[in-house]
Length: 160
Image 1 (cartoon, rainbow, N blue to C red):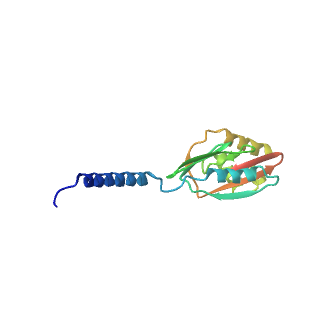
Image 2 (cartoon, rainbow, N blue to C red; image 1 turned 90 degrees about the vertical axis):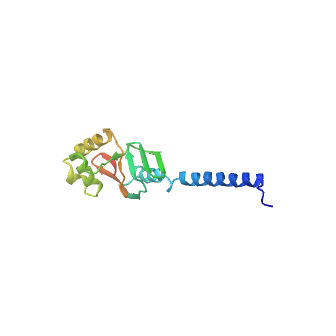
Image 3 (cartoon, rainbow, N blue to C red; image 1 turned 135 degrees about the vertical axis):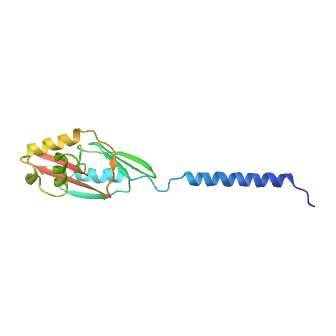
């Protein structure tokens, strides 16, 4: 009556092991989904490929981001995501930065390029300089702004 059944002991040990493994798996799962780089690439592509000058905004659920003329990369606690951009190369606009960055930021924020740059060639040179730099990871903003701008014969898609 008071004897220990050997199979009951193994059942309890097996149940304890399964419980520990289950807790480990649940703890290893990310708390949030990875960011949506494809959605941002779609927004950028819709503006960049558009026939007319336009502006769009896209909310970000990422901690860090990296924009290059042909890709967008996002990272948060849930992982990282990368998406290639279709269409013409974009011009990443870094907040702060050099004098060129501040001028491009003003245009991205809605100021007409003719009031910020002397001529279309200066605007084109500033955009080319912004595209050619080393693009690093930076803190992601709450919202990403995309604006296609035409000044003279220059057509640029600013993203920042």
